[in-house]
Image 1 (cartoon, one colour):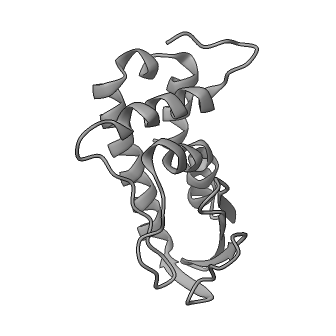
Image 2 (cartoon, rainbow, N blue to C red):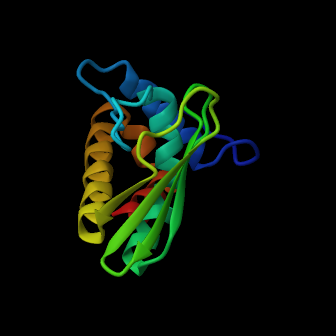
Image 3 (cartoon, rainbow, N blue to C red):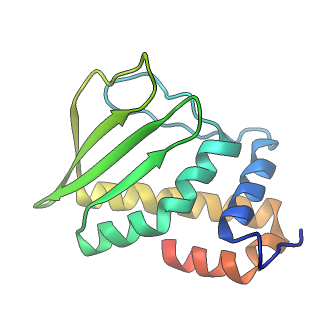
Length: 150
């Protein structure tokens, strides 16, 4: 795939890879949180949205900072706020979707568990991307992105 310096950036590559992965048998993206059933997320849209925010999330966890993951796509429209408190992260969810509110106001996760969860996500995504879209993973934008999440 050819990407334009004027109109594209790494988000275009991530969206293309996620679209390709969505067509692979057995590939799924699951989000469960706030004592809810699995959220209505998809590989082709919502995973791409998360992946574009992953470098800043990984950096924040490494440095012990706060960060936000915004699932802004229509149909999910939820914001997760991660605030570090000692060796834990306090996670709150704000819904912008009428008709859905989290059952729990707050969840807690140990910093090392969050780091491991983000690492596992990036490792699995990179493995699948290499298998499905070998040209895309060689693009300089994708290489920089993969370094930021590794």
